[in-house]
Image (cartoon, rainbow, N blue to C red; front, side, top):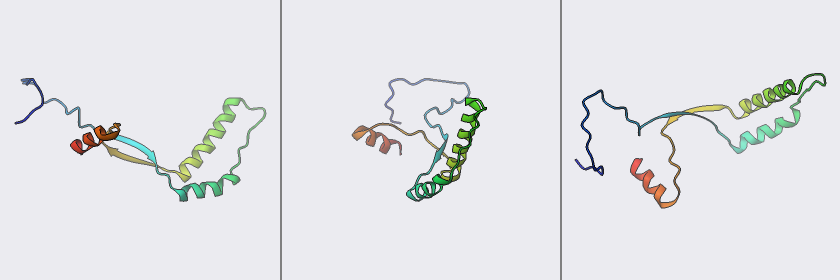
Length: 101
């Protein structure tokens, strides 16, 4: 067996968890030119109704709700399960990705 490690640890307990092979659940929104075009067609029709007597927080809540509905309508969330991304650039990043992938 080949190893780059300089020490071997003898362990008789329960098998340790694989810490370097984790999977993450990520939420992302796909974006495409056609989605942008549909959003821009709909955007002029969107209305925000604020009440003068209401607090700033309640007016913000109304605006945030409308904006979130627009976001969910035109750019729905998708879920993906995968390994964490490696954020390395250049030749070093390419070599790491080839070794792992």
